Image 1 (cartoon, rainbow, N blue to C red):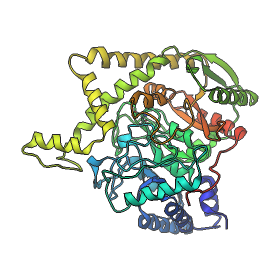
Image 2: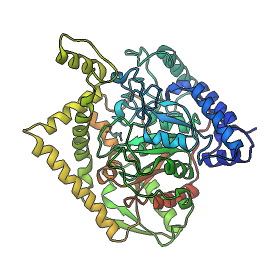
Image 3: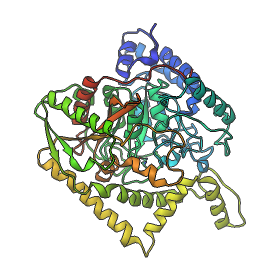
Image 4: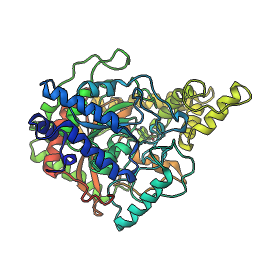
Length: 523
Ligand code: GLN
């Protein structure tokens, strides 16, 4: 029998319907892969009993002819999504041992449609980061090997790290004595991208505030879509920056992300920013012709020092779409250069407010103090990591009385201008915009941002604009760099027009092929 973990979600659905294998077989195959792949540190909690019980229920529904659209499909859940009765930490010490009494809307939609939960996936602490290195559970390894690294050495270091870390029994351990070597899977949804690329789940939930779905997808050769703001409910997802946060799927094919997004999306009375719009059958948009569509190439994305392989990838992507009958036009999004600085004001401002709720009284960690203020201070000092504290301080500063107008108000004005740039392009007949997803391929663990955090922030240069404008964006694998590492292209659409993105992305996917990880060196 073929390795069931190598089927796409669409193939697995067909195999289940044809009774080639059962949902229990499929779940067991993934549970086995997760065990072998533990040294990637992609999961922070495995839930095998729950998975097997859900798979059994799926098999019963399949037998009765009562299968949902994702019946029996094993998924990983980013640890930012609340799962009822299952520990949810946002990969922060401040939520150590937090067990939600409710389920996020996204995950309850997935279970309603028959999907199976395999466990909770690692992420940057409160989704703040671009490499998964800010997680209290430690970094995640990409299944892609760094150039010139011997698989045996990377594996040995990873196994040593994981045994020091005792993943399944202990809460975020403070001082892990060993270092991991290897490539980052991107962030903040690094557990999601690594697990999907390494076949440790068929698909995963993820969130994107400034690129956290699209950048990790690009770094690992997987597909990730950030839907339009308001398409998916944010209820039950730990908030980072509420006006930018949006959940979406990461999977191995465009079709699989289309199938997953259909379940994620839809109106929800529990989130007032979630729109009351019918959800299209996104799978129908996959493979649709792009003939006659107009694809914009924004000149401002040709940033200084862009590596030649990224330019080449971008040109090839445009050529593929032209060949398929689309019109390629150069466009201008004049305020692009302000997006990154404005994002790094708006996002921390909202984060500082959202994270005020973690005070040691209501949730998670509590460090006793001599009075209530002392308790707050001790709890927050012990519970938050360095990057989260940095964001809270920046956010508090830009919102403070003397600086509010100079920073926060100006950033909001820039946001309006950035949004208008896109509106103008779409008003001129552009159907979608093509850009690189990231300025480089994946970098090494420990390589970026330890001296200057801005070095890390620069990674988000192509993705944050989309969140600032509230638009949908998809990252699709489009090639390999000279070192053999995956690179992705990004497509940006009109508000609530995810369908066009699925159509255009599937043309690129078909022409450029897929980029699976070659061998399971971690096993
Ligand atoms: N890397 C960006 C940040 O650190 C975006 C993170 C995200 O999208 N959650 O803020």
